[in-house]
Amino acid sequence: MKKATRTKQSAATCPSSYKSFSLALQALVMLGKQSGTCPSSDIATHLASEATVLRRILASLAREHIIETREGRVGGYRLAREADAITLADVYAALHIHDARSSSMLDATGDHPFGNQMKVAIKDVLTDIDENMMSVLRSYTIADLVEKTQL
Image 1 (tube, rainbow, N blue to C red):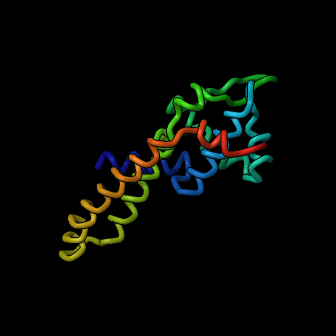
Image 2: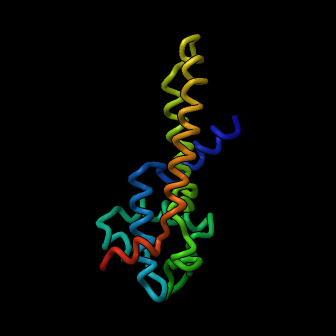
């Protein structure tokens, strides 16, 4: 029950979706190419994204110490560690996408005898999906994406 509550809280602060994951990766690649800080408005403009949504995503990344924030006139965001030390799995986990996906799939089974059987069956599949996906995501870093892109 605690896990479901955490998922709902995370979803309220950051939209947990693959779109959020994509925007987070794009923002991190931009930051990986910058030598200093970069304001969220500049990142949003470059990504053609809504600044409010992007700030929620960046706040989630900051809470997980993937990026740092700086206040003031020269404020903005920057990577908290080297781009080659940030895996795509770190980003995925920071956004709690796996929690949202699992919860929505399990919720769709319903609260009836057959639905309860399906929950048990689906949990094993979801566990395998998560383990395999995280394994792949751990093999890539933000630096890998930085190398493949140009601003």
